[in-house]
Image (cartoon, rainbow, N blue to C red; front, side, top):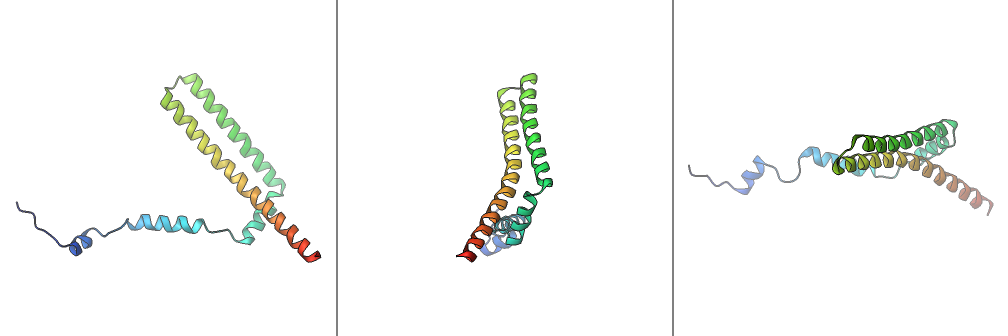
Length: 127
């Protein structure tokens, strides 16, 4: 059977150029997330970080991260995983720990930024 040659335009109608729509949508959403948070959001986070609620949540997250790391070590030691499986578990635990610590850092950075900005505004009014 002889293959029929088709034009580039016809081929693009069959298979459009570029990534699929769901990938371009995901890229667009990721770029929007990177935009700087609104100042009101920073203020809400700063107020929340100064509360007893945040202190309790932070303590809880830190304890869970510590327990996760201990559990992973115990599981690897007791089970006799091969090097690849043990490495996978440690990498996964590390990634989860970093994600949880990023939440803590995000909130506390916003608190520090808002506090510094308020100090600067007060000093500017005085001067």
